[in-house]
Amino acid sequence: MKPTEFFLTTVIFAAAVILTAVLATATLRAAGGGEQLVPPATPAGLNAQQARGKYLVDIMGCHDCHTPMKMGPNGPQWDMDRALSGHPEQMTMPPAPALPMPWMAAMGATMTAFSGPWGTSFAMNLTPDKETGLGDWTVDQFIATMKTGKDRGKGRPVLPPMPIQNLAQLSDEDIRSLFAYLQTLKPIKNRVPQPIDPPEGK
Ligand code: HEC
Image (cartoon, rainbow, N blue to C red):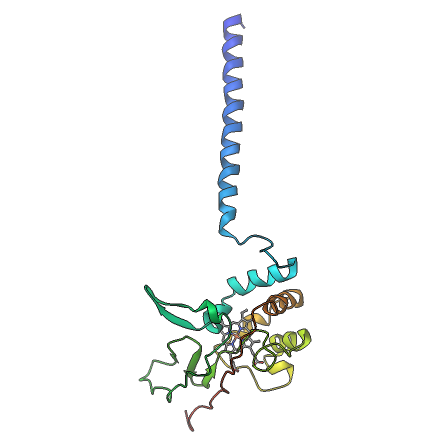
C-alpha cells in the first residue's frame, strides 16, 4: 500500500467511526424525546407503588367511566374537579330509553350511567370518602372484588360495563398499586345511586 492509499483508508475509517458515533447520539436523543410520552416514574408526592397505581389508572381507562364528563369548548371532557368520583348523585336519570334492535346499550351525558340488558348501572365513587367512596374499604376487599367479580368478594355481582373480566387478570401487586393510588385522591362526598334491575322480561 502506497502512503497516500494508507492515508485515504485511515481517513475513510475515521469518518465511518465518527458517523456511527453521531448516528448513535441522534438515536439516543430520539429515544430520550420519546420518554416524554410516558408519565414520569414518580409523579411529585407519590411513592413508587402509588405512582405505579396512577400509571395503571391512567392507561386502563378508569377515568373513562368513573370521572364525570362536562361540556367543554371542544365537546365533552372529563371534569377533573370531580375526578374518579363516579356518577354525580344529583343527576337523576330518567327511565332508560327503549332502543330498536340491534342497538343494545345507552349512556348518560356524564358517561357514568349505563343502561342495557343488565338494567341501569352507575360508576362507583373511587375516591377515599369514608361514607360514599373507597375510604372504608380494605385492600383485601378491593382485591377480592377484582378477583371474584362480586362486591368486596361476597356481595352482588359487579355489573357491566365495569370490565371486571379484564381487571381479574391483574396481579395482586398491581391491584394493590391501584388501591394505593386511589387512596391518595381528594375524598369527594358523592353517593352513587344503586343499580336498577332491568324491566321485567327484558
Ligand atoms: C367501561 C366503564 C368502566 C371502566 C373502564 C371501569 N369501570 Fe369500575 N365500574 C363501572 C361501573 C358501571 C360500575 C358499577 C357496577 C355495579 O354497580 O355493579 C363500576 C364499579 C367499580 C367498583 C365497585 C365494585 C363493587 O364492589 O360494586 C370498583 C372498585 C371499580 N369500578 C374500580 C375500577 C377501576 C380501578 C377501574 C380502572 C382500572 C375501573 N373501575 C374501570 C364502570 C367502569
